[in-house]
Image: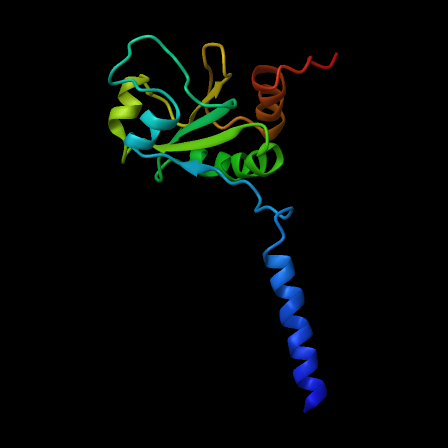
Length: 150
């Protein structure tokens, strides 16, 4: 019984050390934005006419809907990109059925529409369910400004 209690105590200490380790971080995930969060984190389209991204690192913005098949295809790819590039970019998701004012402000008419938003330039869009390689290339060249491979 004494051995069991010592083993349990050691296991508790190890689990607490792992849980409280500041070097360990949760894998980055795509962030769902509502109307107010979009205005706070991306662009205040209600008070500004000219594009001015207010984020502190580049972003992908996925305009999607639950009923959209291609949106469901691209969603796991965007989650993979969020996990892979989470220190360097944000991956945002805007549900156009729930946040129609945001979609209207950007003239979204095709789903999915994926905006690649550099910190200091105009966003660029890809419409439809692009393959991971194309999305990754856009992250590398548009957002992270790495040279294209020849």
